[in-house]
Length: 476
Ligand SMILES: Cc1cc2nc3c(=O)[nH]c(=O)nc-3n(C[C@H](O)[C@H](O)[C@H](O)COP(=O)(O)OP(=O)(O)OC[C@H]3O[C@@H](n4cnc5c(N)ncnc54)[C@H](O)[C@@H]3O)c2cc1C
Image (cartoon, rainbow, N blue to C red; front, side, top):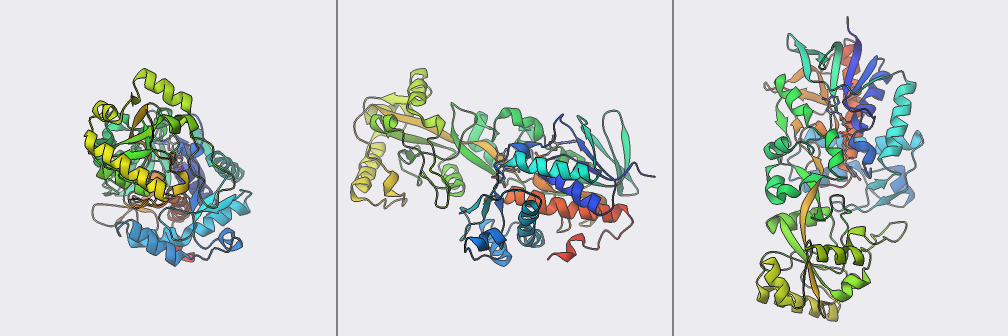
């Protein structure tokens, strides 16, 4: 006798989508959430969603297909994602975006995505709106919620996962879905599973959105899954956004008027590039770059460039407002000097290297062509008279991590014998190796697609179905 057919751990996008799919499959469902509020990190998400072949793209005249997304997803991730998993994600995400829209979510446009040939990032009103929609639907279908209860242990009988245990209670379940989110809030797990990020960032590291979001990303799926013999995937795969050290929560969009140099004074990137190019450039530079600019640029404080397809012009990133830079310079958190050589000395960069870079950059501004990094000349400013400024930048904000129990295309957790562990499913950021290093909007897409697949599969298993019959078989 079970307490619930399906128990879902976590109430973010993945957990709620799984709960809805499980109850649609006829299961009684309990969502257990460690925190007091529903929504996890998902509720704070910008919630751009990767999808290919949607009616929203077609309405904008964008030709796209899941086949093309699959190819690009795999190429961007160097084919390190299991192809079956990437295939289901690529072919399943359009249906999820349209499902959300059919249930009332406004799709506000489709933006270009850094790794894609075609615009694929479906803009939404944000994470809170999606959580609200999912929570309302889950409740309407009779899903129950247990809040403030952290699952500490999985119960196993004869190799089958048959329940969960919190500190003071054990529940019998027909199947369990892990949807406990990422591990970006757990410094020890980050050391173990994202060592390159930790090495590059040091003590600047914080979850994107700030340290108060760390509580939603304790990485619990790792220990829970390992305890029942699961294998892990997605090791050292992550995405992080760049920020100055003087703020903890920052927009990743940098202004066009900075010149980003490495420790030799060499310019390393188009400073307005997207997250993928920026992440690679900063890592290749050893984890830290300096944004160099002059007094005129500080005072002008032009906003970051507006991407093609955006509905309104970008406003200035608050971290780069003239008065903020001034205050930080006075506090010693931004380097300032009257001469370029003085600035070079302050930040430990060879003066000749920095001066040559600035002269070359100024030449590009005058010629209207950035021959080194192809930045849009419209947003470039020459570096003229002092005082001069240098802001240290690192990949300080963890957007997502990818390490967790390996799943197959049916969201079943895979054991050490390379077979699914009966009764155990995983979805969302905790499902190992589904979101790789790159592709805008893939975490949310993966939460929705594998949430649905996990919930449907768990319901089928709990109600006596064959776990190896693909619940996602109706979609490719
Ligand atoms: C500011 C911000 C902007 C973002 N922008 C985008 C974007 O535009 N596009 C995109 O694709 N991605 C984006 N992301 C990433 C994406 O939103 C997340 O990867 C995704 O929402 C994670 O959802 P989840 O359901 O896997 O986990 P979460 O939403 O984090 O939910 C996990 C839940 O599990 C609970 N939990 C953990 N352990 C236990 C346990 N042992 N027992 C019970 N409950 C437990 C947690 O408390 C949490 O509530 C963004 C993230 C942030 C923070």
